[in-house]
Image (tube, rainbow, N blue to C red; front, side, top):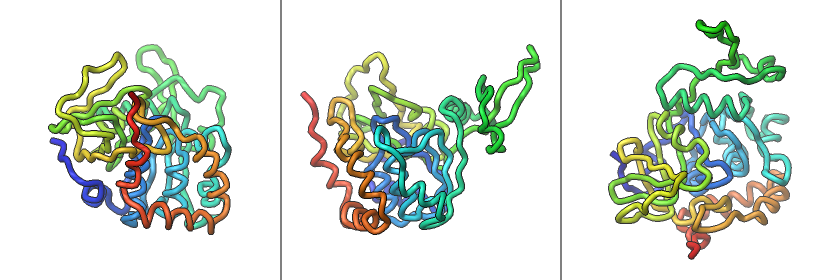
Length: 282
């Protein structure tokens, strides 16, 4: 059953050096506060998984926390490159970074396979694509019933999945609404999971048509962190800070300005600093 705890305790107890870690959230509900706590605690040698690594993973890569990354697209959405990611790949700074690139469809199917405790996912994909030439984890299987040749990729089974959600009740049941991405599958496929939420309530509101409820037994730790997805957005709580994504391009271009930003805004800060962004919409 999920345990309600502090962010520092949740990360300390569930994220270990060398772990495979998934932090999911598709534009919406990206777990920035939790990622910053991973940096503050000096976790290292992590193999990161994320369908769309953007600024949060740029930060984790830039501080040297990552040994590798599995992903299906990497960039600063609507702005350009991830400069810390690029520096690691091109110049091995601050350390070399192993990369494994997939398509969105393959990643989503691999998470689904992990949630179902299957060894691999298969899909109609990569037809005419070059990724199989450079990624040995993209293979082919032949359907025993029709003879159709399909793409196959390993299931994603993280050591720990970290997500941000809207609400949890006091029993540890978690509610996600809006764009939900692959958060559900990433949690169900993981050995351990941490969910930060905007608020803990007595009862979850009646769900909207696209809502997802993660039951308490599927979650390891729940942490109340208002504003914990900023500068991404939390539906009904606060908007995405497009200005920050634009500003990050300049901050991350230079190693010194990046390190200064991390020192001021991560190492000298805490999860409570996210709360000023949590202005729940009427």
